[in-house]
Length: 74
Image 1 (cartoon, rainbow, N blue to C red):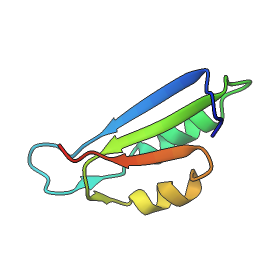
Image 2: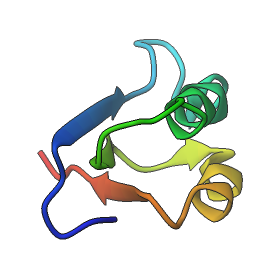
Image 3: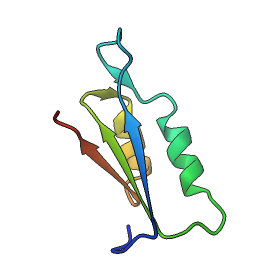
């Protein structure tokens, strides 16, 4: 991630009201689309979430060079 991004993208992530655990489902697709842009601006991508997210480690590993996962505590 660049020290001074031109664009900040916040991806909010939470479970639905009946599932005890959120699932990463479309997260990799979303991050992949952001990563594959043609001539993108300098950007930072932040995934804001509550723990736990089932399947998130796969996305963390795949996109670790440009995505910051930040756990929300409130």
